[in-house]
Image (cartoon, rainbow, N blue to C red):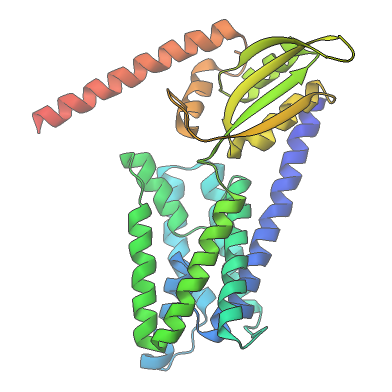
Length: 331
């Protein structure tokens, strides 16, 4: 019953933040950036460029949302076929809904001051991206492309995205003047800062969990998270009651899931979060965790099962590495 409530709560939160992400992005674009000719990041900015180019050279007044939709349809289809998953589906749906809203909602300036427009537009777009990624999806576009490249090659395309944003700024300078291009830079910087604040999955936290139900909490954490846990016997200085202190390092992306797992077993558990500067040793990313969960199977929640699954996974990874080396030698 508790698992069902947790599941429906996560679904409800995902739906709420899905539409919040859509509203933030549409507001940032249609009320601040687009009316003031200030470009956004990624495919949003490219779509704005295409809309402006069609108006100036072809005298076709095609809205930004139309281009955004046209770009995201093939990206979403390719992403679903190549990697599938909830992330791709929700990201594609987010892009489609945003595109429709950009077309339906009139682009009227909330302010005509370009500095305010770039700052608030960038903040709203960044908040949209950060909220989306915090709850397991994205705003589409380059995010899906990045995931496809990362899954297929193991490489990130952060440099490519930075180059694309730089090209957007340069073209903006030629099209609408270098003053607006500098305002575009301010908007892009504001977007990046908000994304880093709201979604910092690459940052690590050390969680210190003090609980009177140590074994139950360990079981639920092993079931929901693939993370190492260190156990410290402890007792209250005032009450003298025996307790267990659990220490584990997690990413900020896993914070919500960890807190929900602990509270489902021990609502009175004390959780202290410490910022972790760096981690020496192996810290598994989301892909390795997913492989581990698949190796364990749906019912394997014991420590022995996890150790066995970890050994099997290491053997599979070693075989894949050996095959890649053989293929490279043959080439």
